[in-house]
Length: 273
Image (spheres, rainbow, N blue to C red):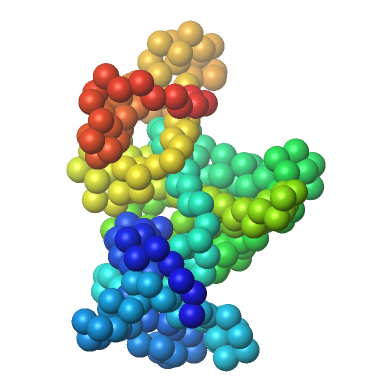
């Protein structure tokens, strides 16, 4: 058993549901559908679970790669084992449909994994949690760095559950007996259409509303004035859309501010690429 603050809730990175970690069932990742420890049912069990959360360490749980299951019936994803103890940061990549958000994720994570980068930020190791490493190498790394091919455009979402790439960064123990610091970075890849349309943004890309950092990528080939200045043989085929990158960014930022309960004039610092 591990003591936790009884008022502390966690947020599922896939569906955005908030809950107490002790209210989750512990399930097997190896044997799908196997419940190793059911979720609390009685009021007494729920109260005790607020203070004492069942540990998932030890041979019994490691053999099953056990994890806590999101209690949202529409999600049921296995949560990162360190979700309650780590500092969690949501990285929202937004922008035009053809701006290269997937390519940016591929390059960003590749750079983050380099030994020089880890030493620069004082990180001792980086670990992909769950299926993250497999998905990253299949969808992002291999096409860009091994096959030298573009990543296909991300399709429009059909589910409100959006699974991120999750990387745990472990920082070296500092002098004075302080505990090791763990940080989770959640990287999301969404269709540009799901981000540009406000109704689809709040339905399929809810992670933007709880983002710790927003990186906006603009595609200059969607900007009429930029395209007009290009030589004829370099102009893109097709009709340039009327909705500008600035319109998309402003709409997303207003939605984000509203979701955070902030005024439209609140000052934000963001990176525009």
